[in-house]
Length: 191
Image 1 (cartoon, helix red, strand yellow):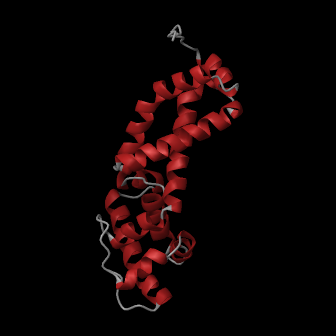
Image 2 (tube, rainbow, N blue to C red; image 1 turned 90 degrees about the vertical axis):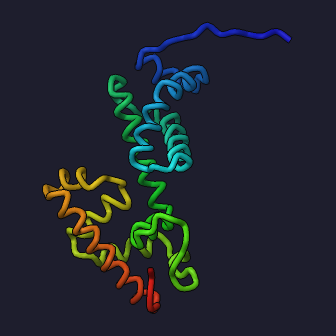
Image 3 (cartoon, rainbow, N blue to C red; image 1 turned 60 degrees about the vertical axis):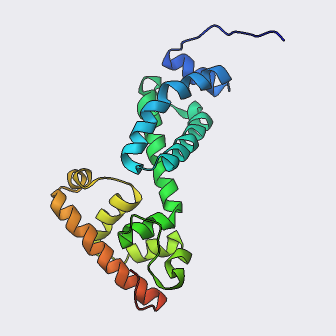
């Protein structure tokens, strides 16, 4: 069997975008190897769970390869990839109602302390309906923290409030959501 060695190729961003858009496997591998460490670092900062971060990164790179022909400015390739990764992360957690329930209940572990796993049957759309019933400022903070994955200092900067106020709104949102969950499911305790 003959071993074929390919000459290592480097690409400009413009060449990389064009080659990836044409499904050139070598270019796709080059892009993946070039940006994977940065994107994993970014995701690990927000997600903290390596398995989830890896899953999100791989889903994100699939989107990158499918949508690379839509990029308008090859110079901003890294920023475009970061945007796709952050949107992929948000999509991932929107689908992961267990994550939202853990945020609501402030439970870092996977143990459940509520009656008959009632919350485990709750779908994301149900949680979103309940979030919509929160006071607007608390709902905004909860969405940014639990769904978008921002830290309190980032939320504070976005909303023009202090990090302490952001933490207060998150706490208030959690308390109100617990009450709404009790009412929604007619249960006595959720955590």
